[in-house]
Amino acid sequence: MTDQKVQFGSGGKLYEITLNRPKALNSLDLDMIDAISAALDRWESKPTGDLILLSGNGEKGFCAGGDVKAVRAALMEKGVEGATAFFDREYALYQRIANSKIPVVSLQHGIVMGGGIGLSGHAQLRLVREGARFAMPEKSIGFFTDVAVNHLVKSAPLHQRVAFLLTGDMITPADAIALNLSDSLISDDQWEDLRTHIVQYANEPNALDAIKQKAAEIAQPVPSAPFIEWADKHQRLFEEKDLSALLARLGEATDERAQKLHAALMAGSPTSIVASFLLVHRAQKIDNLAEQFALESELARIIVEAPDFAEGVRAVLVDKDNAPKWQPDSIEAVDQDQFRILLPN
Image 1 (cartoon, rainbow, N blue to C red):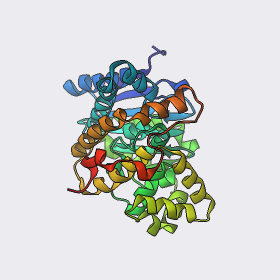
Image 2 (cartoon, rainbow, N blue to C red):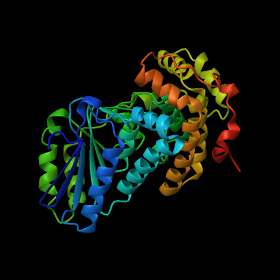
Image 3 (tube, one colour):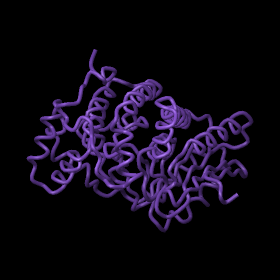
């Protein structure tokens, strides 16, 4: 049915999962998460295919993240457990994709944000269309940089990770590849034929390797990564271990991007910014994906109990007045003891 929020298909050795909420930029709600999980149950119990193709309908984007309006509604109606049920099942799905018995190939196009990075980034092969844009804008809604993106970017230098995960800035496919959120850059011309190639190579004895080889043949040379280059120019700034000092130094930087991102951070939730900053440093000592997700599940409970999540979603997505009243309203006033699970032992 074309009106289903997720479409499933199978043919030959290929299974397909297609997000189908293009008007909502394929934002994930709990029904979609549960439907995808159920499909994986069916396919893994009696596997007839060797590959899963994960994509999204609509020209504007693969997935703009989780449906946090619905999460806020659950929080208002059922309390913390109602809200965190979403995150628990969301994180379980991403972890399952990362460990899937049937390899997953994700197609990343247009907007890939938040949960969209979680859903596609943990696949065994990530192919990105030129012109795509990635972001982690959680600070604007009172949340934190979750979906184990810290685990995905772990191989990047610390200053690059902090720059991306703290600011949540919109980045290019080249930046995403540098940060290990994607693998290969595919041109618009080649993108149109990509599914045909995948269907063909899914029937090969080792489907994933065959598609990797084909992707390497048609991939574009990766251009310069503007966000990474900018972060490198400010390496010492983003290596600063004191968050207030880091923000002060960012505000003193004279380039346009630094000023823009400093202003955005000053407008974001102080609680979210502190949580994301502590998390990126805590994640340095975590090598296990399951441990990362378990930590984030605990952190999600702490965050949704704080007032900023409900207020941030209200301001940005419900009333859309873009005038959140953060509590507390400054970095210095945030009680770090609430995030003791992130603090050094």
